[in-house]
Image (tube, rainbow, N blue to C red):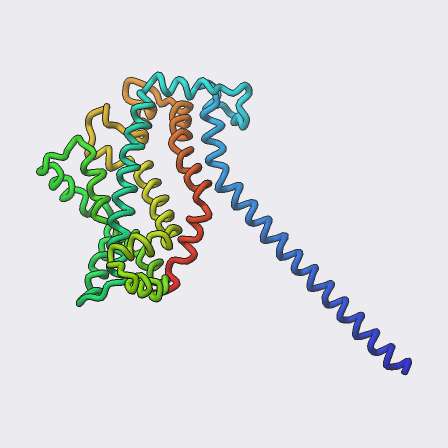
Length: 299
């Protein structure tokens, strides 16, 4: 009897040692993983910190060596100086107008196209869809010149039409993203809506759109960031300074043969441009993550 107790006690001691060593290994793995995550976050966050820090420095401290990591005293008047050098309010308004209309056009056109490819049955659907998403492999530089010639012939040069109108014809990537999400919505919901007398557009408006909020939020965020940060589009199609957007306003601080580069004002303008993107992602991150996670469950 005592021998059995000794053997059972030895087994329990070995199990405790094994569990303790397993917990120690798990803690070591977690420590390494969290350390790598923190280091990665520091590497990613550092450029933005340097941008904010430089925007608060005096011009003489920008190129100082060793670098001035924390501007003491800070110079928040740099942001007021930006508004005095360029019509900042006008550029913000222009960027908001373009971004809002582009988002509206992208959500309307891409959701309708994605609904058609995900739910409607018609001959050649898959082939047409492949043709639709094939431009995703082409860089903008390939069709930039033909597109510019087309818009110039239409009389749209030096206007917002080339920047806004294409959004109302859909984006291949966003259509693909929404289609993959819609494929995961049960067909029984649409069947129930049709039994109640809803048509395709009624089903689209009352059933599909409310359920597709995460994917629509993802498309809206991608579209906003693309339109808000777009530099080459306004640079190519807009020549009137009254129509300039915020990214084009950065060019005023990059210097010329007659003036030096104004790094502190350039960084202040960059911070102003980045703030809306950060706020949009911060307040919509839950929907954004849901849209990315649930997209692609069905193909």
